[in-house]
Length: 156
Image (cartoon, rainbow, N blue to C red; front, side, top):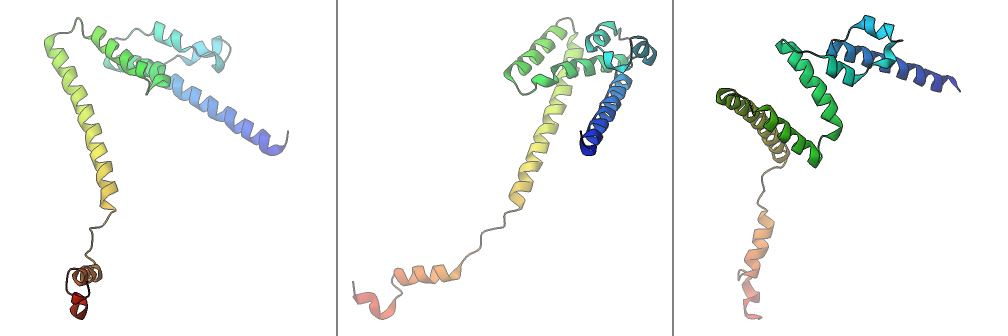
């Protein structure tokens, strides 16, 4: 193994360790539990999900991040949207009308932001094109064809 390959492997290991540290910080896992299990390589997402007992808004946001991370590999598939719809349907079964309206307005805000971003993207594409210009030389040629040809009018 040459030096370049060894350096790439070393950097990859450092990057993976940094990513793991970020994940541990994001999900609020205890660093001491990780070292007791034999190092950092034994992080179990399902264990973090199962052991999480959300009480505060921040805890529920961590739960949402865990669910999103679990669903992320399936984004863009037909099943992903079906899963989200089923999740919302099940989650809203016991909700009050007021909470459901709040959720509806929240989803509408997200939808409107995405539509605005799409419109801005489309505007940028069309802004690059200039307005059409009138070419006078072609209009003079058309005039000649329509009868402005002078002495050649009698020919045909």
